[in-house]
Length: 267
Image 1 (cartoon, rainbow, N blue to C red):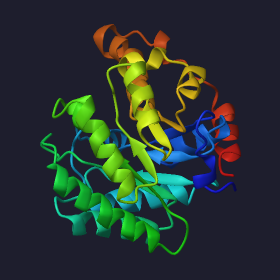
Image 2: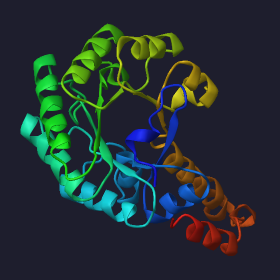
Image 3: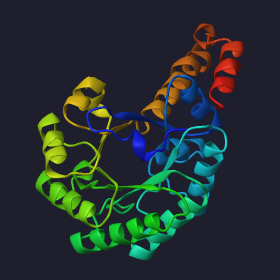
C-alpha cells in the first residue's frame, strides 16, 4: 500500500473519497479510490443527526477505525474542530486517531457554533496537533483547515495568513474549503509550500480534476457529496412509493454486482 503522504502530489491530486460506513468505503475502493476520508456530515446522517450533528471524539475515531479495518487503503478522519477549544483537545484527538491506526486526520479552526478561533488560539491548536502527529507510532498526515471563508467568519487574506502560519506550526496539508473561485485557490497554492487540499462542493462540482491539477492542488476531497447523493437516491426512489404507491423507481444495481464490488474493495 502506497503511503498516504506519498499520495499527495501537487499537480497530480489524490481524490480523497469520503465514506460514511464500511460498505460505502469498500464500494469506493473497488471503483478506484486510493484513500478514504471520513465525513462528519455523512456519518451524522447515519445516526439520524443533521449536518453538524455532534458526535464525540471517541465515537468519531471508533467509526474511522472501523472503516479502516474493512479496506486496504489509507483512511483519514474528519475530526471537526478537534472536539474542544483548547490546544490539548486537538493534540488528544490526533493522538487517539494515530493510536487507532489511522493514516491522518484534519482539524478545522471554526467551532461547532461557526465561530472562528482567534488567530493566536488557532495557531496554538495546530502546533499541538502537529506535535502529536510527529509523536505518532507511524507516519501520520495532519491537515489543518482554515474554514472561516466557508462560514463567512473571515476573508481570503485572513485565510492565507492562517494557512501560512499553520504550515509554520507544522501542518502537513493545508485546506481552505470553498474559496471564492479558482483565482483564490491559486493564491493559496502560491502562498504556501505544503500540499493543498481542495473541496468539491457547490459550484466546484463543475471543476475537473485536470483544472485542480493545473492549479497545483495535491488533494481533492469529496466531503459529504456522496452521502448526499445516496440520500437523494433514497428520496427520489421512495417518495413516489409513499406518495402514490408507485414502485417503478426502486430499481437498483443487482445484488451480485454490489457483492462483487464489496469483495473487490476489501483490498
